[in-house]
Length: 38
Image (cartoon, rainbow, N blue to C red; front, side, top):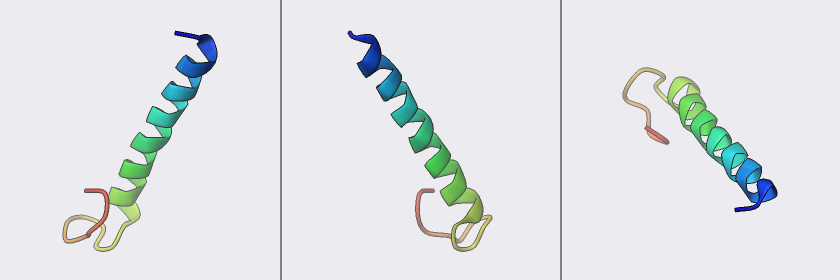
């Protein structure tokens, strides 16, 4: 596995996790009742 692919994949994973967390926190309904990533 090349270094470029490894760092790129790690960055994608981090961004995806952040997207889920932000979607949960600031999505419609906030805590529960919101549709989206949760």
